[in-house]
Length: 501
Image 1: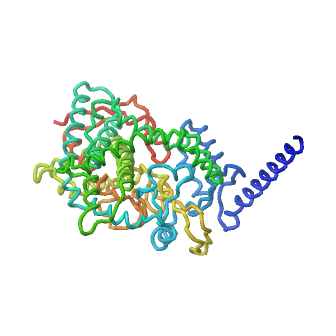
Image 2: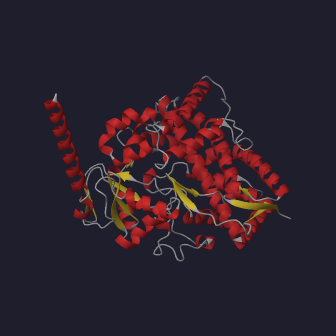
Image 3: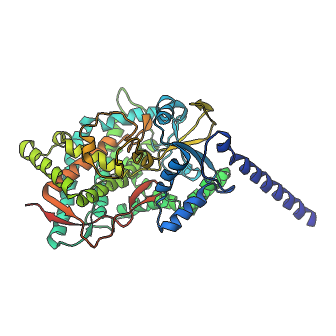
């Protein structure tokens, strides 16, 4: 027995020694590539620096730390996110080479080990090049054409009417309230109806199960709330273990009721219910039939609807929340926007076409997303094969990412980058510029950006046509924090609302 225990101990010690030796060599790769970066821990990379930043601030503002690293180490630097080597760049030439010109070698998203077993693997969010991402993207892109967006315009208008009823009640009592909370409810009702014709009552009932489950999924994405996700990032070598443990994770518990519900909706719609509805699920089901059917599986349809739910709910509401804060803070900008909205309404009415023809509303939209981009940590790509770009040799498996906040705050890209100046976009003619990238870069950018833009502009046009927002003197400054993928307002957006004369 003693001999067996001794043998096991020796094997274990040898395994640990080999693991540490492998990790030590792995942590030297960035230096060998000729890149600079923060010094990593042999076990968990640069996560200790992130943890110290969170402890110092009392909340997660590590997006600022990564922007500071650009100033210290250059436009392209290296770091280790747990057990993964990352190249972080804000260099426009580098971004163009990796995300556009050599896209085929960087077509797969950067996905932590634990997330590889969730219910998004057959969606555009996580689908790989090898799994047929390109074919599914070509199928889904037409769903967001101008014609399809116009068809959903009235549906969104009806949801905004409900939202404005809530705003009117806030105006009547004239008290400070969190408009971000109401915008999240609006966005979830919009995406539920437009993605798969689900009628929810989130605006009037925050105990709505649909709302609770969607919020929990986003809470579990954050590694601060999901230890298993965090461990899978730190130790990707144990992928077999994370696969086995995934069904016991909080993320699985949060996503399963939504996936089961979407699966039931799919079956009902397949049987003919809601055939007259104009929504993404109906359009996807139509793609399964006809001469040009693309043979989408039930799993692909359900998981892409799930992806639309997640992407369209949190990000759009966050963008609108920031916009409300910035406009309430800058009363002169709010007044200019209101004047344009009223003039357009009096001349042509507020329709799909007219809201997209307002130059100042478009400038506000772009400047809000530049200054406070909701998505800052979901731009990573994985190198599929060894490649050399601009003299930098990138090995297979390396993660490459853009820190969107750093690009938008780069003084080489924007003058006075920390100031809210919508006017900078009034004569901006850099279409396709990589200086403004809130929806990502290249062929794998956000497929639903037209939908998000439509909801944003419709909501702000209707809201500021009827009301004005103010920030009371005793309300603390709004603080952006990182919650997994999204940069959201830490304590919401506290304002007062007043009817316009």
